[in-house]
Length: 541
Image (cartoon, rainbow, N blue to C red; front, side, top):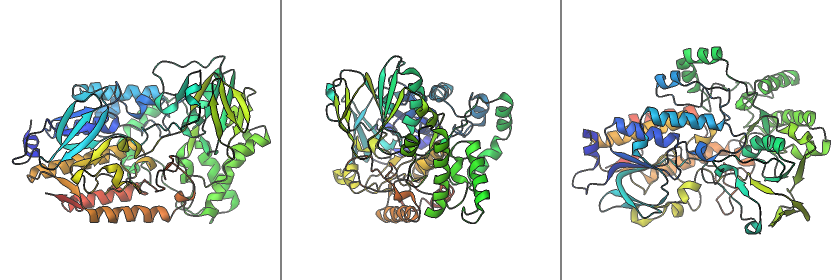
């Protein structure tokens, strides 16, 4: 162990098993491990699954792929790593992203410090010793000076408590916890419940296999075409040659991708120019659609123009006007996560696809051979729940996390998550969250957001070691100020105008609080300022 590792235990403290324990072996946990090694610290990663990859290890549903372009959705900390890996498509499919995660784990020999098939049941801060003690569901106890939660924002699958589910005789799946073996729907009657992102990606693929597909839709979602294509070698090589410029550009945009927002109001141009701009973004494909104008999430009138453009494309694509109307959202576009699709709307022109509207009357119950909705019985062989996640806080709340005085994190977050910078929680010393609530996280390209958090946390741990300090803790004042700031920014936008998982409303009983921070560039500047001022807002003592 290096000098930093020896310092981190603090004078007179009982020596813990490790300097740092990390929960989760996704992209956050892997990079955290690598950075701690560079500091000479001892670390172990505890991972529920049998392999690395986090969300890409679990989300193996048909059609699963990233909605950020593959040349951007990858680590940036090593140019050698960037240059040696070749993505095959514009938008990477899940198997390829998982291959990439395994490549990183192999390249940096990470597995020797990762404990797989290990679910953490509790994490308790022992004030007398100044250490965190984590206990696994198997009863093993491990201690460390620091604990880093790399549990991911979308890793706690939400399976609604449907009446009668236990009576269903066929198999059922959740898109967020898909089997590792292939699922063949050939010749089957399949029900998909939900029309969020995973449903929009999987429905076209399932429809091609199934004898008949029933889609149960509570709320329609906006989707824009991916325009996915194979990555031509010359295109890939050109991007690699200019990676430095691309990365510099990404750091200046609102969400950490290569598409800056058009600095013009949708209401300050002619109808023809507005249509031309929307069409150009539609033809390009992907999430850049929301960069068409600068006020789409600030003005309902401006947003209506973007929403109506998409509704017009739905009406053009779906042959049945009644289906097209059911598939056309009436809400603000972008207040929920905008979905990126391949032939989603076209799928409803297939004769073997039935759209069932359950917006006014939800699925009543599951039966032995299907389900009942709106009083009608649907006989199916398989059910797919595309019902999303307990986003951002779900995985943390499933662990019994206790800070000073034995107070649980779940109790502290009873009225909504409270953090400083989405990284630390007052009353929970030496506990850090990677892309936690109160950080840009899910509103950005997650990989650079993860890297920025990991580097901030590792630098702060090193700072504490250099100054012979045992604890790093957010102050209550800094936390209060940050929570107020996050809420103030969200309140100036259209994000709170609809019921989305950004607000946690998809989970019964979860407080309605907008969880991410708006502004990737501003957030990075704030973190740099905090570090430059000796980690202002943290008590390093």
